[in-house]
Structures are given as C-alpha cells and as structure tokens.
Image (cartoon, rainbow, N blue to C red; front, top):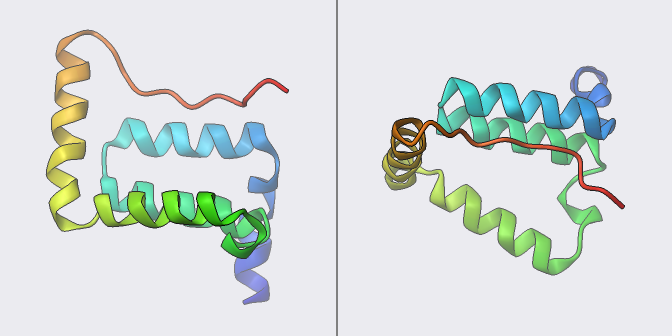
Length: 94
C-alpha cells in the first residue's frame, strides 16, 4: 500500500493531476480513465475525504465507464473529433 501511495503522490499537485487525466483522455480508453480518476482520488486522501455529493457523482461516473459506458465514451470522443474538438482538463481557478 505504501509503495502505491508513493507512486500517486505527485498527483496531489492539481497541475500534475490535470496533465495525467488529460493524457488518459487523449488515449481514449474509458477503463484507463476510471483508473486514473481512482489514482487522483487516492492521492488526494481517498474518496472518504470528499463530501457525500462528490462520492455519489464519482460512483455514477464509475458506473457509466463500466462496460456499457465505454460505448458512450467512444461515441462522445468520435463526435468531438469530427467537430475538431477534444475533451480537456484544467485546474479550476479559485
């Protein structure tokens, strides 16, 4: 467990986390997106550190990225690509 925490520690930095998720989005693998989000959440102290509403949103997204959600994710990527657009992740301004 300690080694895993050391591997994701750099994701505590919002810029690092945003870059990491951005790369995963570019690769277009919804299973990897789910894993990447789990890594960022773990680096931030785990899902228990977030309010109930955030936990619920995460659980819904995780479910969406499950088997059926993969198709929807790819459809969104294809549509955005056809429009000359892409998903992006940036650090939120405070």
